Image (tube, rainbow, N blue to C red; front, side, top):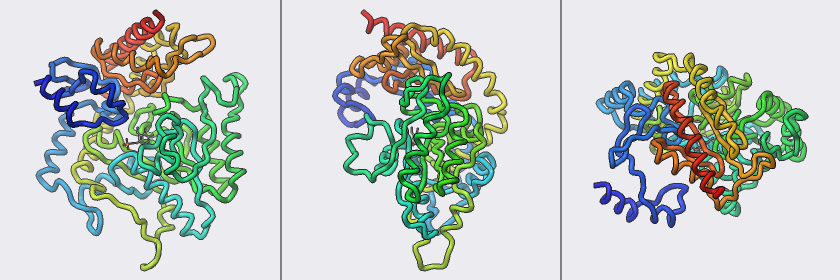
Length: 451
Ligand code: PLP
């Protein structure tokens, strides 16, 4: 059976973010089932799911409460539209979501993927200013190294050269400011002498585009896809103040950081920041079904109120906006945060993971271990003293992930960074096991590169 599926995969599938020539040359790991925090492949082997199936299965897999909620919803209605109709499931999901999101966000626009939630935020921000008569505000500021999804709008605000540069001719112009990458500060600062010059750099961009910026878009606290780049304390708060001074909206993309990932329900809470627009996806359904949301303040929403006919309609919508099955999963997932007291338990797990990673931080081929909550990036370097990176072609992160698989854990590389995004449901012992596998894997991979 494994052999047949392998052949069929290679004949029919086109995998995301994958160099298909390489893929076709190798035997794939085919996930067949899952249990708790483990994935099971077609050969019956079990793996710790160290990345929550692309950062979304916060409670792990086959969670009874989520299974039951989706089944119960199937007995009512699997899908209905939000265009011209309301639905019980989407109303309940919006109510529950707003109980957890920062106070001041009052409106929920459902969509079906993180990228679309970002598209929605960009269009809302732009139209908000247009409707208020501030028609010159049509530009966006974003950070280098940012990742907001793969649709063209979200790629335009994205700042990862490797993923985004090929599409440049198709994109609207966005002003990118340096990222707060303290380990390799783009402004040449050291931690001891840093005065958040990276904030000054964003201010500079705004000064050059005064009155023209619709919104600043960023991932709060951690830039995930660029390698878990953690922001220094105070950074986000200063950018909120900057947006207020400049009359621009602040869009916080919590697609990766949301739902407990950084140690609080949402990352913005740690800086006491209220964004004008906030995007969520991934963990919203506990990783069960595709759902995303763009949350807005009443101020943004009110710009869209006015008599018909005029341009106050927000012209955006997808067939599966607020799909009832996904909404039911979202409600059940949020209920689990309450019934299992997940946020209360998190500090213990975060500390356990941090202790377990201490040995990795000392490894001669590890430049830095960056951890915020249960979001971890281990940056591999050829030379710890000079911070010389491994060349891209060495595929250091990819090699480490292969070793990890052989040891029984699924991890993902981001270039030279080994990523750990375990389900919040992992026990301290499982987190220790995962960190141990990551260390052995990176030791073997870098050892092979050294030879
Ligand atoms: N925004 C951030 C911060 C992300 O990390 C991601 C995905 O990794 C996205 C947006 C895109 O989400 P999706 O893959 O659901 O479109």
